[in-house]
Image 1: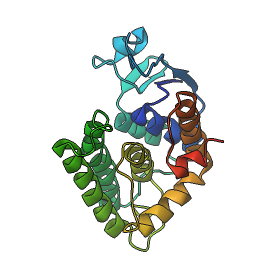
Image 2 (image 1 turned 180 degrees about the vertical axis):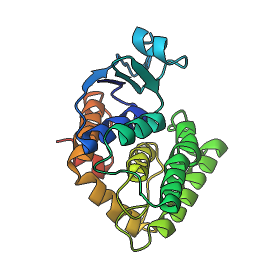
Image 3 (image 1 turned 180 degrees about the horizontal axis):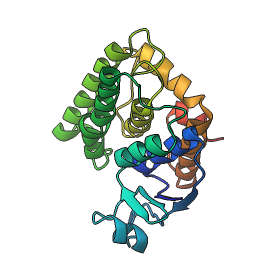
Image 4 (image 1 turned 60 degrees about the vertical axis):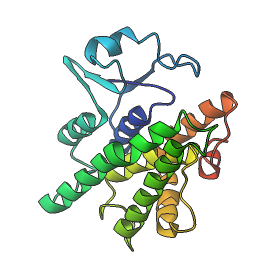
Length: 221
């Protein structure tokens, strides 16, 4: 099995953490990346398999798939244990919704902030931070007294951990209104698979002269 990812791919990191949590053997291929040009030129295998030219891409024999959520589903099918979706149908649906919302509701405003870090008062930046804070508020209520977002540890936790990592980097961190969520993040950071993947990303950022949020700096020494 071969997983194509990138040193700053939030979605690739999701897939890598999931594979490591599952104990699935794979070869990790980090496609070329530069801060100035990003992933251009596109990796030819990634471009061949994914018309969007984006990682992650998974190759398992004659199977070639892309999209982190599709990769999650494949991992869950071929390696049911440890389970990373709840077994009960309603709980599984809720966990899948949380994973989807991390990618499609929370993360788009964070992407908008990527070009606005030097202009924090730009109305678009202000609105993006407001949207991130509203999502943190919602997730603080969602986790309540539970250890993990969807009850048992799941792909929903992996997805939001990686997404909020980028939020913290892009001037939209959690604050003192989110103590339960920050405690959840500490539990996530203590997991071996999460620490390995997030720590590698942090070290790459340090090598590029980037400042890290404290929780990520602690994983990157």
